[in-house]
Amino acid sequence: MLNILLIVVGYLVGSLPFSYIVGRLWAGVDIRLCGSGNVGMTNVWRNAGPVAGITALILDLGKGMLAVWLARMFGSNDLIVALAGVAVLAGHSWPIFLGFKGGKLVATGVGVITAISPSVGIIAMLTWIFVTGVTRYVSVGSIIAIVSIPFVMVVFRLEPPFLALGVLAAIFAVYKHIPNIKRLLVGTEPRIVFKKG
Image: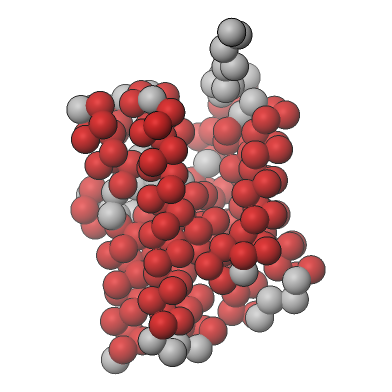
């Protein structure tokens, strides 16, 4: 019963729409009606400013970590910890509080992975920073970072439930980024613009 409760709590934690909340509180905007319409850090950054975007990023990372920490705190085995991770990702992507229309799970996914294995999580973060910086496409950095996670997990010999979680996270993330991939293919995906001076 406790294990089921932890998975349900993981979903509810994931459903907390921090990007939406930050956009509302910081700039008085509904980010679902702005820019890409995505409930995520990048859209918050573009429509409410960098501080709001970074705040949303930290909160989304944190909720991913929280779900894993709660499962481990109550003595759950690796399978339940992994399922709690899947639940928080599902909550973020399909949140009950926003009509099941959520974000693309990269930040929350990295939070989950970091709580399971800090080394893998840090590598994913560095990959995101490097690829995004080189390509100036947030979506490319996000996709490559999340897809790299299962491979890094293999290198670090993480347990099978966590490897399965990494694979699912990668599949979910690519699926959620299909619109970005289509825009990349036709050259209409927006890049990060670095202002001079």
